[in-house]
Image 1 (cartoon, rainbow, N blue to C red):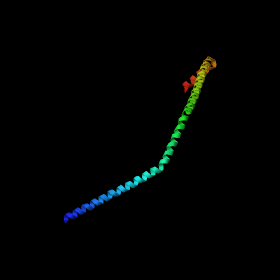
Image 2: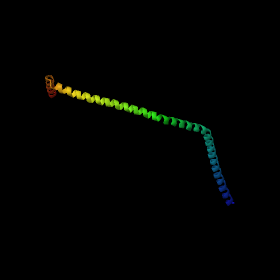
Image 3: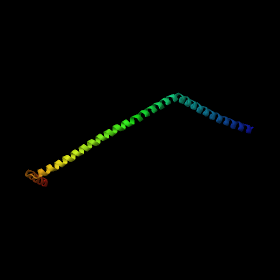
Image 4: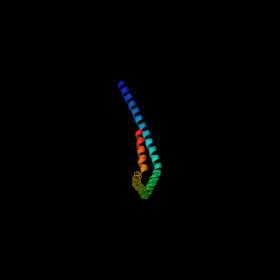
Length: 123
């Protein structure tokens, strides 16, 4: 009799385990079915998005050479402006050196230089 009670307790425990496993499998199956339905609904939208991305990337591919051309033109303009600035600076510096040498030879400049040197030594 005790043996039958123990067997029935083990059988009931196995039924409970089997029921919980089946219950979890049913829940998992429902979640998978909902996911499949959602993917089937969104599949055309995903395809539309992919087509849109493909068209956009095609347009960008067409625009890249134009953008590169504009960037090269801007680069050339910047280089030209910098070269002009450098050339004008060199020219101004050369003229400035000649003028400074001529001014330095005058009596006024020599007196001013001595005065500035004296002021600098005092300070």
